Length: 343
Image (cartoon, rainbow, N blue to C red; front, top):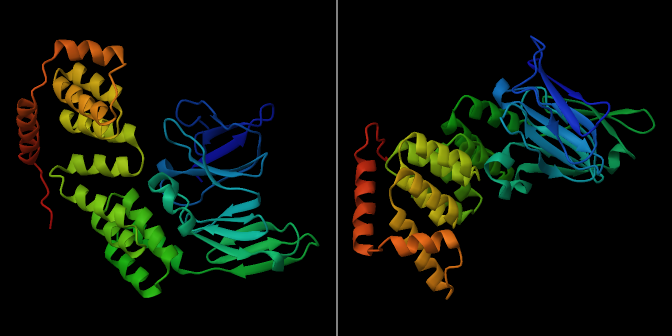
């Protein structure tokens, strides 16, 4: 009961958000805009207000969600051919009638952590038993109530375990969450736990959960993150894992880890941003240029960017000095206060 979402009558692509208690507009007061007209919208019922999510069905019958209290709320697609949807009253699960199937997204926020495993976190059931064009009336606990086209009300039961997993995750009871998944032995539960722990930046739990669903590459990356000496470096790496590069850069710059921010953009081949950071902070310009030249030489290409060409003429590249500077940066990061040792 903290947020009110209202669709604009004149422009049905817009959703205005207000504080329920005070009536003030949320954030800057600007509405959230979708590309198409919005047919239906509903807010989730659980969790902190800053994590409030809005689910919508647009003119094309696609369903999207967005975190409405973020500075730049953006809709992310969950599914297609959706005719009805409802949030659970006890935890943030989303039920929908999707292309003649009854679908439950056990953890819709997976799109903010790892969209690759979205399909693993949902439950699908043939909706033919509910008749033609059923409408979801309510989704309480593990019971979903629907009204059929002939007016009859039918109820279907879902697994109670995802709600328990949500409760454990909200209280940071990760050991209990792992025990529950090992007891249930359901890939959907493991996928939900993987996304929940990744979003919460709990590396040990994420490593176990991703291993359970055979995501070997992600297990290896998490193992690499655990070896990063600084807490800020690990948090930034997990933000990057969740495809939040702007947040990752912000974490590193606020912590003064300039080289690690530059290195992140080099590894992502975001050369312009890496050079801009190096120039702004007057450090590692030669490092960016050296890795840029190495990258181009592997592709047998010449430098075509005028900005890089200009600095390449002005800066001398010495790999021995560059490697020494990198070693010094890594050593300084290890010696930072509040370093958490890997167990």
